[in-house]
Length: 304
Ligand code: GUN
Image (cartoon, protein in one colour):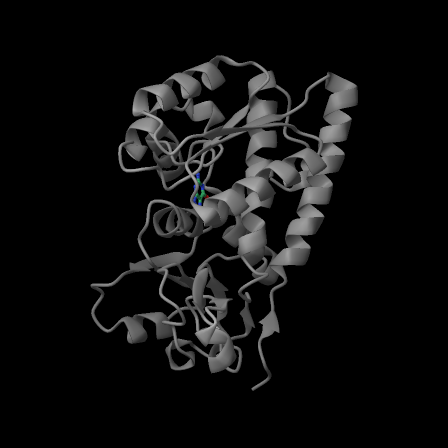
């Protein structure tokens, strides 16, 4: 069997960002509308710092009004809730993202619940989770939205396909399952307590791995020709023991890529697969929120 086609999420995301930038330029000149994104980060988590920097840079590159609020590690929940209330009331801001994780003195669910659902560009508010579940227009979590865009590009119509999602988080597993269901797949959500996980995975025409365990899904778990979407971003020691001893690391997915590519029909690499789609979909959600807020249609060219 031929090796799997590699799904180039990096290139897909760059094209999407380009289309969003074009749409933003047109909205600015034709309607005087500039989508505004506020990103809030509390504390010094190094991975969060990188994500937030990238979100700010890419939103500015796309022509958005972009603000980043950097709050101290010791920020209280009340202080953060006051900032969220201020952003909810700010007409120049259409999207609010509070980077997770938050320090232990802050209840993340309380903060997410305080964000105006129509500005909730992460799609984490229970109102958006509910809208997605019942098929109403929702702001959909960015990584799941990115997965679906890649799948539709790779496969076209998803109707009737057997989809298995490994992982049941609120951020990825559950919403990606909802989106696959909406696309008329037959959906199974598998998790750490699933009996005979390998056999369940082997049924999948579409396998989405979102468990956060390095290279857990092996080649032998994959149905020949299946499309594999690897959401994992796991840091592991470098392959070379000398480099590993110096503390050097590399990033791998939840799928054992070298094995999986010999079996799958198509597969996303890590890095360069789903990861770049997340910020592109954040921009798409912010554009969507801005258009809905202003009562103008979301431009066709972004393929929303
Ligand atoms: N932390 C890691 N991923 C995400 C994300 O998609 N959104 C937010 N708000 N925090 C995160």
